[in-house]
Length: 453
Image (spheres, rainbow, N blue to C red):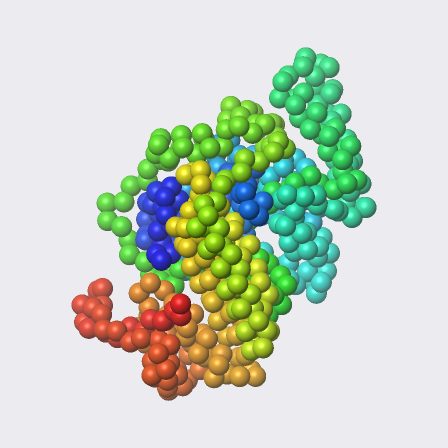
């Protein structure tokens, strides 16, 4: 399993996304490729087994100034290439705005920079008196699971949405009276009438996907027991770039999305009730039956086995950590990611399922380490220190003692950190390796997490 290089088309797209940033950011590029493929393919495709939807919540964590902007821009370019930019949003202002966005278009793609600040603000809405933010997390989590159903909203919110739709319809009808009928405006008027007629039953098949970028400092405090078990973190996939000083690429140049990638994505997207030449006022939607991607018998057997593995993991953590909710959501994430990988090839195989399982299993382990590190800081500091170290040395190259001490010295003494590292090496949880410093060329020791199978 190589988390930096997903199989098939996703790997090629990830390589281009990574080429758009001046500094090496392979983890962000890999996860961004999967997220944006899920976004652009989600209105048209499902699978033959779970009727999975491909919308994902992803939190990307990387050092300030280390290349997040390039990844974000490349991801937005993919959405623009298939005409879905009208459904892209840069932030969240209120619960009402989320619902309105899901009525303007069937899809809402949130691509948010500095998302850590936003969620800190949302979490503190009650204390700060920002009542318009209090219902945001609840609506996001509800909409996430309704991509193949209906999203019910409150009576007040429903009436506000209906009034907004009625006002927009009147503007369209007035414009067409004065300037003549336009195909795109007629289509939008029809969509508005459909929304108004069916709103009482809920918003039909809303497709909500979120990718957010933040720094470690602004993100870590958000990962607590409640957020991991009942909140946004538990429903999200975390992508953490451990290296805060990635190498700058010499001779780097910014290249547009290659034609072969663009045409492949466009071909896969075509077939819904929208086209790539539509105006910004046309609605991003597809209410026809989704195309089913078949699953090979071998992949189906592997998915059955994965269900058992996550059930066993959940039972184990019910007795040890009370974090059983994380593995209980694991299978759904594997189903989503493996479907996304399979769509370009037209069939889901063992390779897609295996890679998706490895990604999700690693994600669950990371969340557990973060939660245990944060929530045990006072009650069990030794365990919290061990989990903090595990998180720091979980990168591809591990980390040096100096970096580990610098990151943790505000909470722990250097002697405590060194002693904990020594215990973890002896217990076989962390391995110590010698490597050459990339600048001084001196031989240094690096510590790297050993993943259980």
